[in-house]
Every structure is written in structure tokens, then in C-alpha cells.
Image (cartoon, rainbow, N blue to C red; front, top):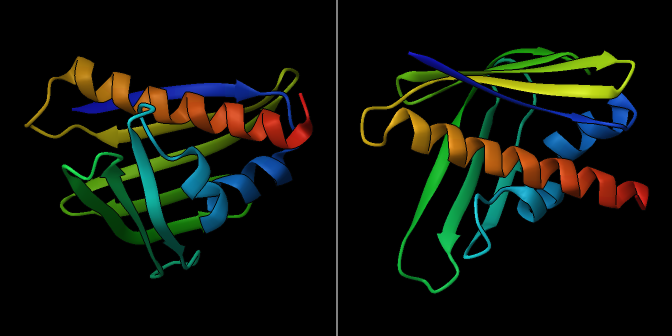
Length: 137
């Protein structure tokens, strides 16, 4: 089953793309709640290149690596990747209200669809806030 989340940001697509793909920015926005953070991130943005984000609870109680390989990259338009046996498609869709960032990912079996949708949407909402902050909005 696939799950899709999205947000629209009133910003230039080049800024949205850069913020999505820059490790220092990823460390600022990549968390589903205030008690988690991303302590390290790496990006080799090319087909066959890899990415990794280390996500940890701020109290040190747990953490995990989210990592995979890019399978398709179209600058300012599309990123597809594989992580484990799952896939993720991220579309950057310019429109009259700004850029819609749409993520479609294969669900996993440990958490409910609602939990997965809420978590991924929360991270995407943090991303949107971070981009707006870069604009001073």
C-alpha cells in the first residue's frame, strides 16, 4: 500500500529543492516531533548515490538510521529512492500558490497507516516551516 502526503510552500522551486537536499538543512527540519532530532545527514544526489539521516530521541533513549539509494533524480522536479525493500517518490510541483512537495511511499507493517501518514506529514510540515523561515516569512 502506498501513502501520500504533501504540502505547498510559497517559495521558489530552487530554494525548496536546495533545502530538501542539503544535509545541514535536513538536520534542521527532519523530525516528526520536538522530542526527536536528526544528528547527522548525508546526501550524494545522483542515480546510484546514497543518502542517510540519523534520527534520535533527544533524551538518548533510541535512534535509527533512515538510509537508501537514489534511483531517479530530475533536478527541481523529482527524486525517487529505495530504502530497504521500500520506495519513496518525492515530486516538486510548481503552481500558482508555490511549490507542492508530494511524497508517496510504500507503507511498512509495524505501524498503522494513520501513524505513518501522521509522522511523515509532521516531518513535511517541519520542512515547510523551515523553508518559510529561510524566506523570513
